Length: 248
Image 1 (cartoon, rainbow, N blue to C red):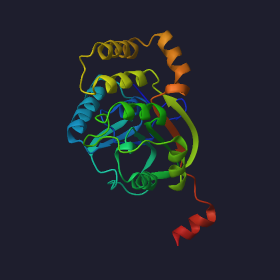
Image 2 (cartoon, rainbow, N blue to C red):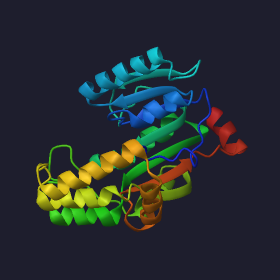
Image 3 (tube, helix red, strand yellow):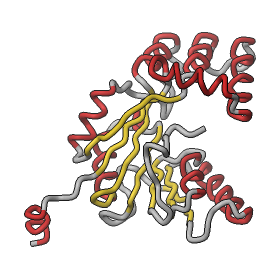
Image 4 (tube, helix red, strand yellow):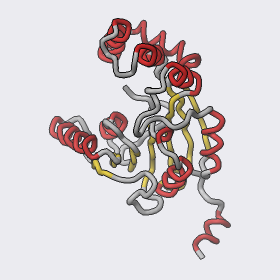
């Protein structure tokens, strides 16, 4: 289940991509399939080991085109182990709401992104997330949990302040918002509640079968209750005068 829409966020074979806070690796895997040179980075060593195993399985199965590469590694989003201007593309999906120093993370992403490079940021959307917080403290008051809720204009302002130029936004995963509202209402750790189990089956069916009815429904509902807010931006090239000054 992808949050980034690659029809709005073009990826070329050979692009060097950083999936920052990759988690289980869903976006990293898609980039690998599209022929990119992918680095999947996360602070969770267990998840990184699983992502590395999936990369190896994808290579063995021939799922990635020739020239594509994939590396999984542990790392700190606030101290990325890469030189300046190392990547053509950076993706950070459902991560920034967990990190106290979100401006520091943006600064690091901009540092390692090449001029002209592209970045995709996804966070929980303000409205649906506020409902979750209102229904359940346990939803966010956990170690490593969500520490803030972004309004769209707030996130875009922080991206501009970091030196990025946003060029597009949208919402995603509308069908998932009611699921999390049910989870919060019945208990985030209570998977036995009938409404939660029933809705979970619906989501699994939707993900596996991709029926037209649910795709149309989600597309219609995304502007209203989409669970995620997605923003795309570029790192502008420095004006020639500034480039010459920086080189001196």
